[in-house]
Length: 435
Length: 76
Image (tube, rainbow over all chains, first blue to last red; front, side, top):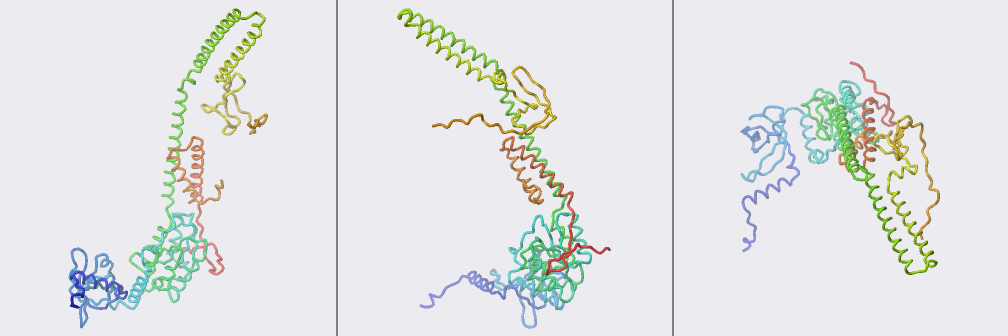
């Protein structure tokens, strides 16, 4: 009954198992195969299906559209090629196939093979991964140009940086960009700039040239220096179609040195436009705030006290009159009562005391009413200095020579400011501490 | 306030902050006046920086010592 304990797979389950196994093998993740294209089909989806064959066998292959579009020569059956890609299982058909990502014509030379080998190696190490890419600084303060100090590339970069954003300083770090040892020099310069504290972006590259001329930027030392750089790096090698290893490793790939300068800094016209928009928003916000303030003042001015201060006084006067009448009547009543009930000599002191109290009460009420009146405050010698609608409470905000209106109890005095000084008014006596 | 030493980036981001604060409309009249003045001053500073900016290009003469010299480009 041992047979029953053996696991039973579904077909797709087994295919998936094989797929996982193949994809777990690092060697199969990035392989270069030499062979001849056979049975080449350009599917309407844009994907290419074909086999690679040699004398003894064939390998089913697929190349997806995005990868196939990067191949720089027309694909067809019968071509000898070097194909780079990974091996995996296509579970639906239960067959393994080669997923080709890069292709070059075989015999294209030792350089191309070395290129592809290094690219595959760096990819295996994860140095080309998207997550490693650093963002560029929005406003770089100083950019290091690691390039040849002569020629069009450095001239174009300096000119474009200067036109777009002259605030960014530039440090030209001169290196040889072709010939024996150029790669080492570039790699060292990247390391050197990383040890400085005044640089926040590196552009490295050169102008166009032959495949051999550009070769320094395909060297492993350069690739590793770029990968190790803590400062963001823009790679700008040759013209648009040229792709170098440093382009793959850099944080940003520029198609040309000029393009690198454009990617590195903002354009001052855009920034000026942004600044202008901010100013407009600032002014609009301030206008809105003042409008709201005016509305609040208007609401207060509409209140009864300010619209008709006399009416408030009249109310007070009426109350006072009625109190006086009541007091008089009450006193009369008291006197009458006193006359009835007490002897004249006994009554007199009490009556005097009551009259005194009544007078005090009357004085207190009158004073309270006075205090309520803004006009009385003016009458006491206080004045209200105003400038337009603004009531001044401080020496700040007015300047000698300006006009000033001083409101007093019976009118307005128009004044001119001769001078001002700031003073600190000390209270005449310290307030008593409460127990 | 040390308005002189600030970089363009700092001035710009402070200006953006002021505009946001004022557009929220929560500050008092006095404060908004102060903010407005500061914002207008910052905008002036930014514009002046842009107008006065002059590109500075140096050539690294010696990597070990860090010695630099103004970069002079050959013509043509």
